[in-house]
Length: 219
Picture 1 (cartoon, rainbow, N blue to C red):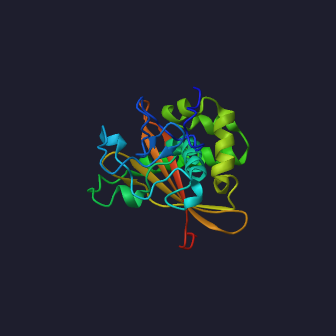
Picture 2 (picture 1 turned 180 degrees about the vertical axis):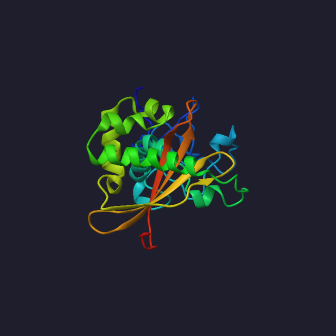
Picture 3 (picture 1 turned 60 degrees about the horizontal axis):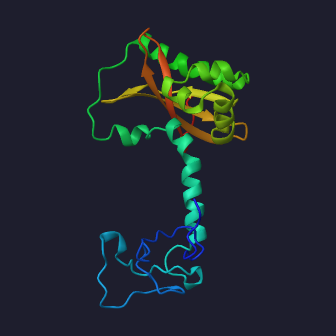
């Protein structure tokens, strides 16, 4: 799409057929300027926003370059968002706890997470990818892209120096398995895995949130 020659250069102008920009400024035939005080905006989209100006040197609001950087970061974060559910503490705060897990269920849940951790430690992208849910696999498309994402965004879960499983938790719409990890540099992390039940009775990993852990690892 060709950029409107009336744009201030920010790349964010949306100018209608009458020369009005979304920010409320008006094309006067030579430049964009504030509309007359008596002018009435034609729509809610044309209402001037206090403090917004096109020129970045005014310092009012975010400069266009900053806005473009934020949009770019948001686009980059979309693939990772699919791999990252809400932390367990946020999920279960207002929800009643479900039935306790049987010993067999705990073993199966933890074996699923340990299986992927082992595959990552071995550098086996195909095996690590196989533990991901169908939605995650669809998001990344193939094992190599999935592995590249993990190495970039979750390096602390690749070859951790120690691993300690907490008891899994069940909420209204998910099962989470918290895992305490320590990376090769000695930093402690809490990885909260969200797992999805499969028709064959097994589990797949539907997401993982990793946060710094200020508690001591279990022994």
